Length: 155
Image 1: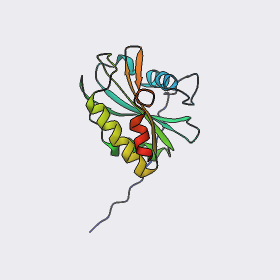
Image 2: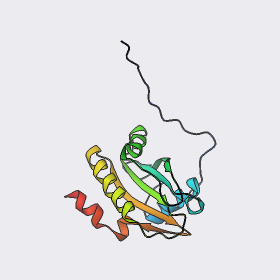
Image 3: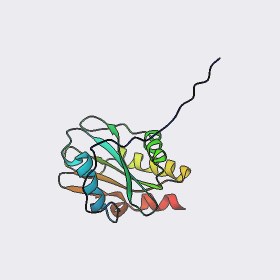
Image 4: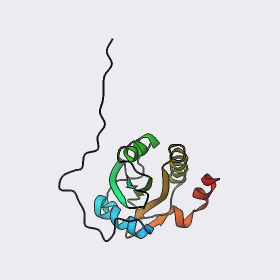
């Protein structure tokens, strides 16, 4: 019987650095700017779920596309989010996805995955700092608009 040994590494993609005003996430608008520069979420024709991995000072240390779906849905599993966060040694994560329709009000499925990811992050010691839904030149911030989801998990 054999046992396979593995090695996990994060590889920086060559030629894919982006000029941004600030790497530090001080507001949802700063996060939205970074997400739109890196992933162009506001113009994607299908749903894309992405994360910004942050250090303890809320500076962006990595950006990942986690899932790409159809016009109205991208399947996201906590395992896929947190394996990326752990691989780049993130202290916390900002999650985001787009609505190709441009309509940024979250769906009940968006609410459910937000709650699920907050719970999973809590178990791992990796805080979800916000969830942005991005549409045509606008965004919805769960932290600003629906803070109760975040507050109920801290108790």
